[in-house]
Image (cartoon, rainbow, N blue to C red; front, side):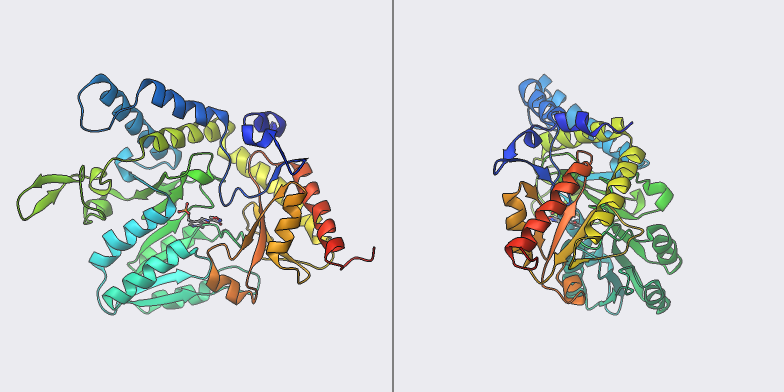
Length: 410
Ligand code: 7TS
């Protein structure tokens, strides 16, 4: 079965003590850690195969190009994309979402068209659409939440009925509320209304099986550094017809067909959207992360996290004065919380002294925090290398917070 102790041994960073305590790393929703297999794949690439891609004909250039294109194939298989060409490598989710906003939204939207965003969206799926809507005189519509923290689907459907919606930008799993959105229903309804759907899968793809064809997603964005890969690499999935119809996002080398004095034309997809020298070693690392996850099995990864989540929810609920945000179900493996009225930065500083790493802040979701009537939250997030002991450590460190800030009689 799922052997966390064995998995943990693959992660050198988790072998150390932080502030004299073994580290309980509960911040994978920000960035996950890297197993040695990923680091070794990246070193091996540099030691044996490094050169620039898609240009030289010498052996190292061919090896580098193969490594890069194999990573694209592996990424396509991971989300069941029909073809490797459906995958555009980017710097991460943020760049992937900006690519859609600028290369699709800016060119296709017209005055009076509508874009639907949601209160669960990370700034990277909200702010680009605010900007594009302004530039195109399009209208932005915000889907709010039920009291439980689920998307208000009645509101969503009433926006669709207006008849002007061209784009729906929605997160698959919220990085604050943990809410897993009914993405398949959203996509089906949006398509019936003639809109394309941009799915932010930054917090879902690392944790559950994604099948873009089954979802019928138009665009889907993912970051490598949240799924065992290095920083600086991620990808955009796009349907072939849509990508083929789009203008480039960035201009420069590798993305052109013919360049004349005063005008140029564009390379085929995916090269059209990968201007300049790409993050080759990043793609190699991402592919090695995908290998690691695939060997574990995404269903098993999801099941492990569901068990941890149930345990954490239960234990945290029993902490006096704690507020847990978001629904109990359907939810991904993270929990945002506040303790009494102790500032999240104070909470996480005390937790850090106990060797427990959580994130504190607004998590790039300011409108959502406004809706929650709180400036900031703490967030514990789980991944394949976490076990119940990490959660026990979190709970006892929270008792320490309460002692320090005077809410528990000493
Ligand atoms: N979308 C969601 C849902 C996210 O959680 C994040 C990063 C992004 C997009 C942006 O990803 P990036 O790799 O381009 O930065 N979220 C977080 C977080 O919750 N804490 O740190 C980064």
